[in-house]
Image 1: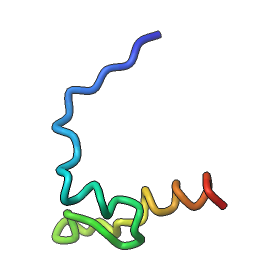
Image 2: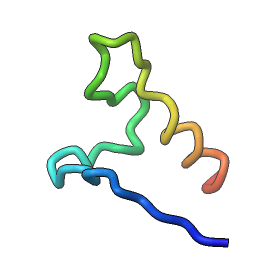
Image 3: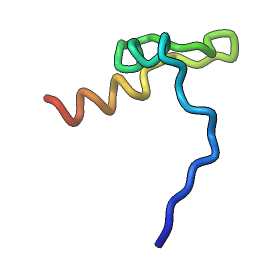
Image 4: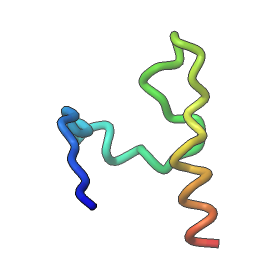
Length: 45
């Protein structure tokens, strides 16, 4: 099994906020920004 990623990554200014609920750079596309906050809560709590 192998995994690869050719994405651009997350800009440092955005990286500081990725686990904040409702933080998104794509609100104009209808995104809520809850994905990583939800995943973080599942792992941490």
